[in-house]
Length: 288
Ligand SMILES: NC(=O)c1ccc[n+]([C@@H]2O[C@H](COP(=O)([O-])OP(=O)(O)OC[C@H]3O[C@@H](n4cnc5c(N)ncnc54)[C@H](OP(=O)(O)O)[C@@H]3O)[C@@H](O)[C@H]2O)c1
Image (cartoon, rainbow, N blue to C red; front, side):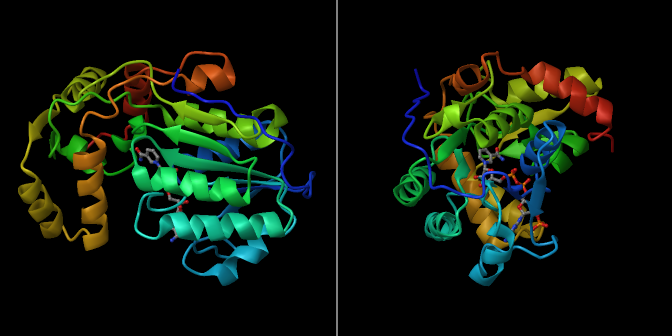
């Protein structure tokens, strides 16, 4: 059992009827969380740098205006909860949220990331009822995030061995988060969410190829070469470091196991990579 459910007492009393704040509400998980909340009839407040008022992780002066009056908050840090300094920033944000009466926090975290675990622990010290949704790599990394251009070009090059990862559908991550934001039965729970099968990147790309009818090859490249290629594409140095960390340390085999967070939180099975690939192909996301 990789999901631990640890309900605690009621979180800080807050504006129980206020809008649900969705940080990163225009991103991969946030916009899906927001959509599910709206479909459930909830008032939603999106926060991002492009929002009005703008929200910026690095500028605490922007936190108060988006927190005031919110009943709950979905906390997805950008670019990553394991990025340098992120645990302390997210903890300071959680402290401010509690101080302003936000009654429920749902924190998006990453499986196998030590710094992310430190962030979870720190946030829970200031907001004990926080629900943690600890996710494996997203399937949507292939069509919305850092792999999309390489998939379109028909050749993915990564410094990853034949390690298997249980890619999770961001739709499932969002469904768990939306449930946790609205149902007090989830208070204090940790949901480790993964997809239903372990796949290497090459196997995942074979499913993408089957869905698109166009072959996408996979090549393992040495770490130094991968870094040089990212540098050459003008990727900022901190993002190069983050991607190298994810594809070497986090994908060192420690994540080769399934988790049951989707089943435990929602009482249903998680979506498969093949289903995701068919959906993504139908949107045209991988067309050149
Ligand atoms: N990708 C994966 O496989 C994976 C797996 C497990 C966990 N995670 C976690 O997922 C989290 C990211 O969530 P996501 O993938 O749903 O988001 P995302 O698609 O990366 O989008 C980022 C969101 O945050 C906003 N944003 C970016 N920089 C910001 C800043 N400096 N201040 C305020 N807002 C900012 C963006 O909007 P603006 O551009 O308008 O600001 C956008 O709404 C990370 O913490 C990561 O650890 C990812």
